[in-house]
Image (cartoon, rainbow, N blue to C red):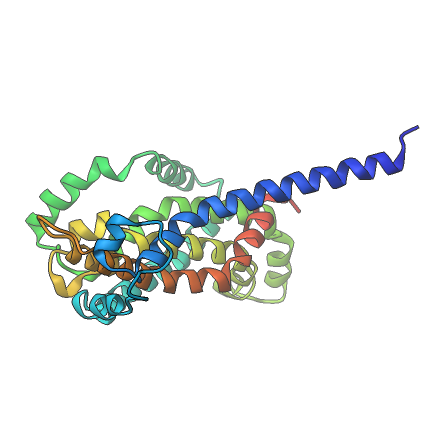
Length: 287
């Protein structure tokens, strides 16, 4: 017969080891962020000579933040990032939810099977393979570059496959068809069933997709750098590039600019991060 005391002692020891390991990993992941935050308040010469020193000998250099806001046109760049990110995410959420619902409920249609298979196949094609013909050839020929609308539509196109795939799995496992049948008996229309019953039930997975896509679009550098060539259209990652020169880099301003671009997305993540866990669990557990 097992000794209950020894069994609980093993569980306690295992929990302590997990806690220590998790704390170590947390510190490891926070080190780069802490270095950026510390060095954003130091002079360039001290960043180069003493990057691990906590405080600049002349005190915190808040002037770096003032220079960063002025030289990278922070508020204009913030507005561009906000418009592009919010419009791209809203488009993805609405159309991915509707498309996934059709794919699930009309799965016997051959057109749905073929379309869904093509969407899954598109996820295997890396962006780097199509970026040259898409941007240099078609973008130049049709004159669609230097436009926020173009970037929003490209974000929508490249993100559709994954979003529909996630919504499809969630609807299959967590949206009971019995509710829709009951609504049909009560006289609810096809569109009413989707917008009044299915869409509210998809809140966990849509929240998860929204957070993941917001993080991706806000921090994206490659696609905006190919589409947006004019300075007035720069997003925050592109605006930080203005501090990089041919022969010298202003590290203090760069660190301050990085902090200014990171803070908004951290605030969003803190408020919405619980939905990531909720969405993953809801999509993984079969009802």
